[in-house]
Image (cartoon, rainbow, N blue to C red; front, side):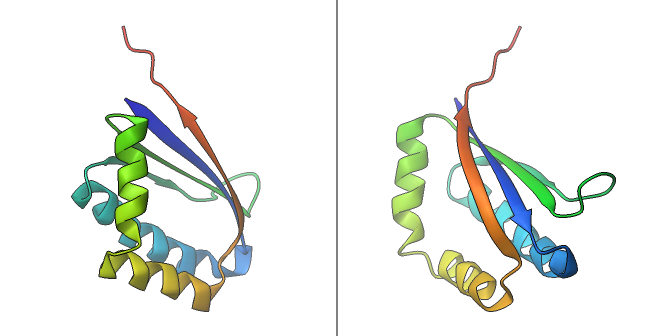
Length: 101
């Protein structure tokens, strides 16, 4: 299993727009073979940092998901919505593997 860890720098004046973006991605990732663990929005501390975590059985399956996104109408709709909203300033993507007992 591989978990994608995303750290977003967002426009703190556009948190509602980012939240809509987040809510739209969760079922997409799940539909496309992943397990979304949720988005985490600012509450205390930095007002412009958000996180997301989702897992795929392997890096190869994650890469397949990324390829299929280009042809998926719902993915493109959400990406285009963010282009219009501009709530995301930047993001960092890291991959981690869980350690379980």
